[in-house]
Structure formats: structure tokens, C-alpha cells
Length: 124
Image (cartoon, rainbow, N blue to C red; front, side):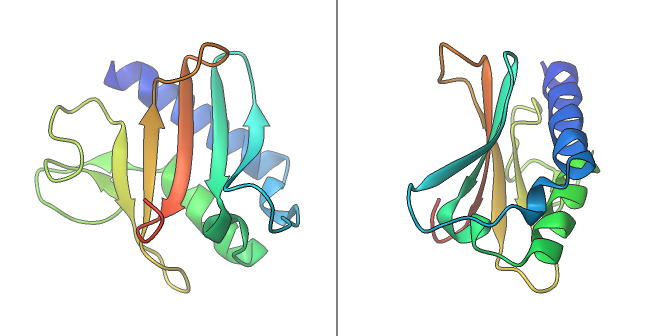
């Protein structure tokens, strides 16, 4: 399961970076902004994350792309505190110039086997 989640996470954040989707201005509308929609995965940003500066969103995407497993609790890793089952479906993301965020993979949509959401800790 962790291999599938890792592959999808890497591919969706690579796509978002390659297409420069962090530069798309977001209006204050829906609670979640869908920025990548594929048959295998969907990437959504919460309202607060979507409102961040483009460079900050780019850093968040890059951090989510390069998450690794850790045996200690530390941000920007999959560890026992956020990912106790080791399936790589949740991580705490902390970068400069941004509030603490969570990257979460859910299995809730019939249209998309996995939905990846980036949200601030206040919104989660």
C-alpha cells in the first residue's frame, strides 16, 4: 500500500510542479480547490493553502514530493506519529513562510481511488 501511495503522491506533485499549478490564482470560493484531476488520483488544496503565495505553494509541493520515512517524529516525513500503520497516507508539513500543514491521502471518491489534500492544521 505504501508503494502505491508513494508512486501516486510523487506523480501528482511532479505534475503540479511541471505544470506550475502553484501559480494559479485561487478565488475565495469553495473550501477545497481541486488542481489536479486524473482517473487514479485527485489533488486538492484547502482554502488557506490555496491562498498562499505561489512560491510558498511551490515549496509545499516540493516538500510533499520528497517525503521519506523516519523512525522519529519530525515534520516532512512519514513517521509513527502521523502514519502509525506505515501506509504513507499522512504527514505533517512544515516549511518557512507557511503555517503547519497536513498532507493526507483519503480513499473516499468513486471517481478517484485516492484524493490527496493539503490543508493547514487549523483547517484539518
